[in-house]
Length: 225
Image (cartoon, rainbow, N blue to C red; front, side):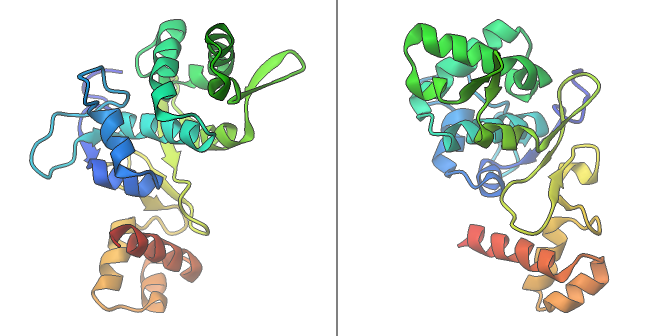
């Protein structure tokens, strides 16, 4: 990816917003973006600048994959060596946001886990018909990623909504989350609700199904709390 690629060229989210949209503790995102021991960050991030956004799309995609590892039961201290092994063996930048993770990553992690006796990492992978595949938890997350022709993540469908289909696509609306049905920005729906408009009014104005509007507002309210 070139430096002017919208996936890496500019930040979209703050660390707090990244945590909220991925339903991950902010402390986890903080450790991945700015490790206290001065090690290399696990997610791509711009230097801090006040309260401004620092996480570009590619860093968001990396955090998305890391969150799937955590949900599959891998402790934080096991994630870094796993990512380092992936980057070394796959041999590409942003390995967590690369399609190679989907095609080759399971075998890389399985072999690494066997060699180092890392049970939690080994549990990420199942072997079927002599092929290494991620478990359903990780596989379910990876299926939410659309990859571009160059092999890197192009868009992500967020997992935190029950009814609404919400995507983050750096080529559309500057990468801000959009509701697929109707194409409205999540922040626009939330702003209208906070201004006092009803769910029915918002749904009609933005052509978004009412149950999806409610879902978006429910998550925004929970995250704010």
